[in-house]
Length: 308
Image 1 (cartoon, rainbow, N blue to C red):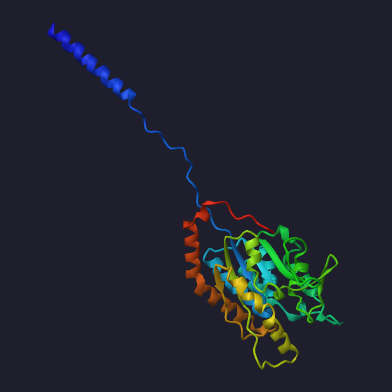
Image 2 (image 1 turned 120 degrees about the horizontal axis):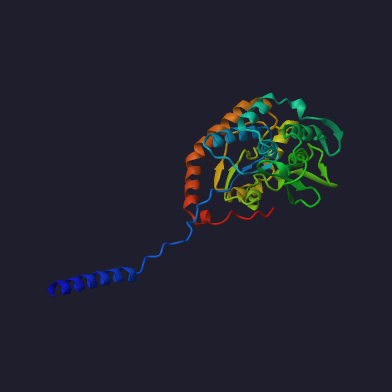
């Protein structure tokens, strides 16, 4: 009798234990997806300054050597010249090779015209040759060349169409180049309204903008022969808006090329080297900016929508 009671007791206990296990609520497994941190959309805004623009090549060389490859390239004047070829797919080292082989005769077509002494057709053709006649919208990197509408004085951003033509418009220094004509409108140097096109880069959807400032401040007492006057003209252009543009940049790189002439192609090696040195000095700051972005709420949101 006692054995039967023990059997019943043990059976009952076992059943109760199993029932307790089955009734225990299981902790639900979270199905909420992990929010991925995206890479920032990086833009580089290349400023104007004639032959001093070779410094942009040095900057690009250093950035890419650190794994920093801009997705968006904006350029004014000399910046549009270098920027267009870079955005078309050329590497910084290919840019350097192109620069070292460049001759003034490949770009300068003198003309007798009341609006300027350089026609600009050679510049247009040279750029189109370097980009393999590829339209801007087909470049591997998004690109904008900034120019000024001569009739309205407003900024114009070329993000589509003939690259050489857009660069020609962006580089058309008043009274030096004959204004570029596109679709019946005349355009002159973008440095008048946007010497370093940071705002344009923002409008194109950049999270982080690196500005490259190769401008020089106007110099009192500068020799005002024809080329000295050209130097001074370029130094004056856009002075009122440089600070406005630079305040919108995350990192500013300023190569020490202010002493070089705007037509001094012989100083290209020095200019490239100055670009390299200035960029290298700003790499720690740029890495801080990139690290801060990765921790920011912005990194968990979709990329900014482009306005142009």
